[in-house]
Image (tube, rainbow, N blue to C red):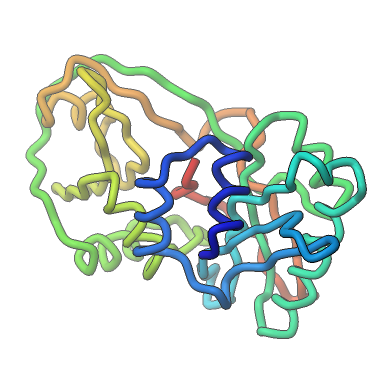
Length: 241
């Protein structure tokens, strides 16, 4: 990433240099990014992760940002349209993203995206401890493929490298989870299988936990087909907010 890309990212999202170092070391690739310049100055940028849905190549678009001085000029739409063209040329079947704020849902709908999955934020208290063991990226990826519902977004490679920089990966009998601690709270980034969230919280010795479940009504992942044969995802688990 260039110095200007880092500056724009920090302006838009408030992340630290340490966070950007981690993103650059685990997930960034120049070929999975797109930028716009105005009068020689960086004006907008975005990045994406490679994913799959039922064997089709999908781009998870991430960290879409426009320089404050250039907002209101249609640069975000231009950035997205140019990115979609690049993705089509590179064989991607579709693109998906998670709007950072509710008002952005309408903006992305105007670009052709539609809500593909919904979610709900839940808080749970500790239940009965569930036997869990830490696992590595390869084991998590293999187990995740087995436990994903049909039409679920397969996220591996840079997705899991970035995830594991801030989360610990665990597996148990018919359970798979990625978690991090925030004080006394266990934040569950993903939980697959039949385990109860409360039991995962208890297993890791926390009094309570927060997670996003897929059974809510709040718009979550939005999807844009780039080919006529593109398949809409039914589950998108790992968004890097």
